[in-house]
Image 1 (cartoon, rainbow, N blue to C red):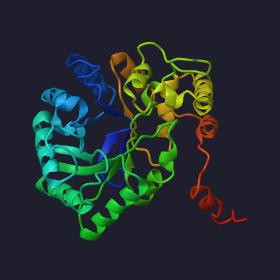
Image 2: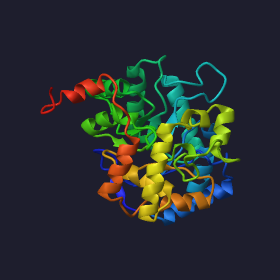
Image 3: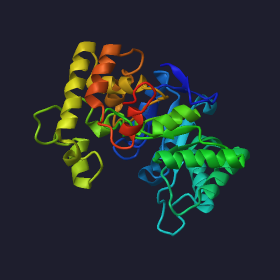
Image 4: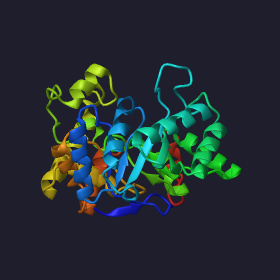
Length: 337
């Protein structure tokens, strides 16, 4: 597996990141250990978790596994923001919650430092200056090596970067957004900010909860029994059947299956490889419930789709531009009318 720099930093990570959200939920501790071992054997060195994943269980599993590893060989990322208890200050991006959160994460991970510490989502209740100065303190203390962000809008990300620059604070070096063939609105602002400001991009849900795994195709009327999409419909998750069973999705899946057949790869491998070739992307986060799923996803690395195959997928998944993007693009130099 190749390595890439995260944005403009000197930090090198594997071009696939192992997501640990399933650890302690769909995957047992033994299965999780097995997946981390296999990921390392394949050349991976980058694992992403969060305090809120199974309320700390995922972090604890990664921490116990790390005890058998050479710590400096691994890049461990985690996140803070969402509720970790029932008290008023058990949630958010206040100085108190971040300090409490990082201390608890370090304890669960059984490590002295976190390589990439990410704010999990925007917090309307806390001034950015309070959040950013606290993150800066963590870097200066050595508890955190780099800081990142997930689930911000374009203006929120740009504002955070501008405040950090103005105040001389440590800046975000990485964005973790949803980005896949069924979610390309990420390109409208977020990818553009990252390319302009030099942030790495580590997309979550590269298979959109299973929609791009190869299990779905035009003509289906219900999700496969026992699939994540069936579960999503019951639990009202974003990737639920009623949100995606439409012509836009079937058009993308038609193209995905065609390219998969042409390339001799699985649809999941094609979908992840497409991301690997998109501008600004550092490392898609691959999640798996078991070794078999992980093995399949690892096959997305080490080869490239052809330019024509990329065009096929781009055209099938491209979103119609809306205002102001259509207006601005239409007035790009050389395109005025």
